[in-house]
Image (tube, rainbow, N blue to C red):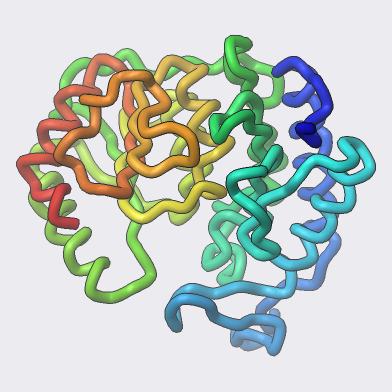
Amino acid sequence: MSPYQASDPATLRAVAEQVAAEAAEHLRGLPAPRDAAGGGATGSVSTKSSPTDVVTASDASVERFVRDRLARLRPGEPVYGEEGAGDAAAARWVVDPIDGTVNYLYGLPWYAISIAAVEAGETVAGAVAEPAAGRLWSAGRGLGATCDGRPLAVAATTEIAQSLIGTGFAYRAERRARQARMVAQMLPEVRDVRRAGAASLDLCAVAAGWLDGYLEHGCNWWDWAAGALIAREAGAVLHIAVAPGTSDLAGDGRTGAGLGGDVTLAAAPGVAHQLVELARRSGAAQV
């Protein structure tokens, strides 16, 4: 028997919004992970896959908080989180307690809490909360996307040369070098490139029309589970190469062919095809 409680996307969206907003308030009440006087990292910071892949005590605290709130609001529903893991195949909730931990560590405001509700590996509702800015992004399948209750829509841009593109880099040096070569090839053919450091917020920025497109290799499920739905519900063309239960959230398996095995792409429809082709020419498949 499934542990899921029967719920429509609107109900799941409301739960995601509530818990994300509460978790943001919880995070704002935690001690900063860096020394206010000298800027040095405290003992609450450790590393995971590489010396640049950091995790703070706040990451663990927020995830515990989210798991506790979901257990109370949605008892018995499995949670898959960045810090506490879990069974991805059985997950009802996918959680990134702090997306953009390096930004958080350095006192930069571009970090977020991402909570998604999934069915058979596909997101049906999600919310992304920004503790520093106070913004709350959310979407439900078939219900559109909003930021603080205001409807979102992607940009109307039609020329890749006039497009602002978001991207990100892996934690391992050898892959960062390959990503840098790809971006160097793309840069002369777009308006500019931005690297904010939080995949969930990059996807929300596409949804809001603040970015015309976003392309990154190596994201994990928790990075994009909520943000990808927000972008799609705002009208973005999506391709997620690796996802439990699905290979392409947009329903067109050809969209991201030749971009690499673990790429995340979201773009306004007017430039999506151009961005895909530019990325291919720039060596995305070799990243």
